[in-house]
Length: 130
Image (cartoon, rainbow, N blue to C red):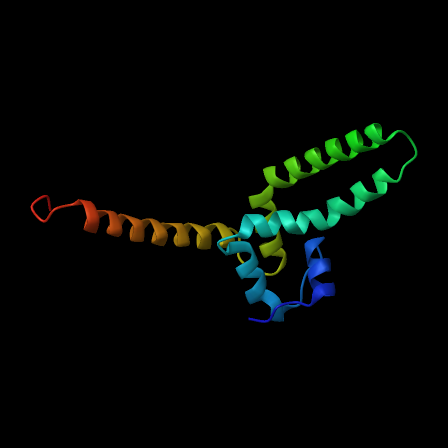
């Protein structure tokens, strides 16, 4: 799996489509165990610079800090509210069929649940309970 460099990743984080050779990495990014944290980190690349600029505006510090806090809260709220749709859109833009990310994450969750259920049964069920 080929990973994009810093410049390509920065572009990807703000919505630029990566070349086809990065498709495996994009799929991993959208379906890995920590896909939500990765998504929030990518959204931060667009939110943090804006907040830094707002801190430089003239006015009292409490007003600037209030502006930054409110703007960041709203930006992260909407980013996270539409997280799954955004990831699916990104995968579609890379050429994957609709709902690919949801399907892969559901399969991984199902496998993890089956494994946990098997461990539970092995530990807490006696052979007589069948």
